[in-house]
Length: 85
Image (cartoon, rainbow, N blue to C red):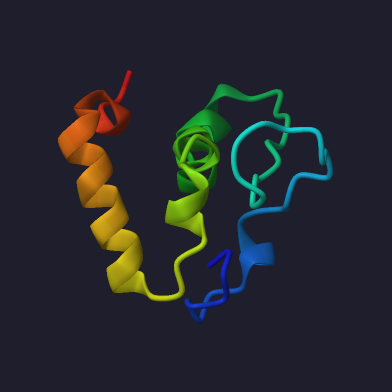
């Protein structure tokens, strides 16, 4: 969605972070603040921390298959990245 590969527009779920001083990759997504705990279980909130912690190489890919390959390499190195806390 972020790179425009998906047919779902990014703005439907996410907003790019305005802060250019963030560490990590250049496609960080902003976290929306919510007063309700229900929102914490939405897809768009659940994936933000994991997306924002991906390496630059993973988010710079141009195909879905390349992205999956990067995730598989990450899983082989750091399995807890995919575990829910």
